[in-house]
Amino acid sequence: MAGEQILVVEDNPMNMKLLRDVLFATGYRTLEATTGAEAIALASANLPDLVLMDIQLPDLDGVQALHRLRADERTAAIPVLAVTAQAMQGDRQGFLAAGFDGYVSKPVNIRELIGTVRHHCDEHA
Image (cartoon, helix red, strand yellow):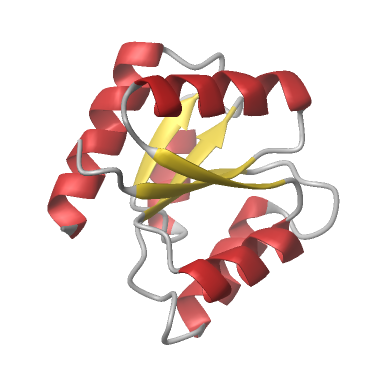
């Protein structure tokens, strides 16, 4: 790994710890946000290589935060993956149609997460 920086947006402390620990063990650096507004500010200031965005957040939801990232020329091209427990049939397509670059369902499958992160970091490099 080249040490790509990933912004993890997650309001649940246990989920945040899991994502942070898995990404760190795989060689990634992380930034952490617990709200959509915080995610937008961190992404604008740090321009991470990838964003893992929870959908259910206490202020802006993940879709609203994504739209704000896409509206800013500095952050518009950063790949953003939806990380959500919304895993009913059609949810993946709905999130992709909303503008997300990928989708990881909760509970997170570690292999799927790492494979998806690697794919998008390699594609963005």
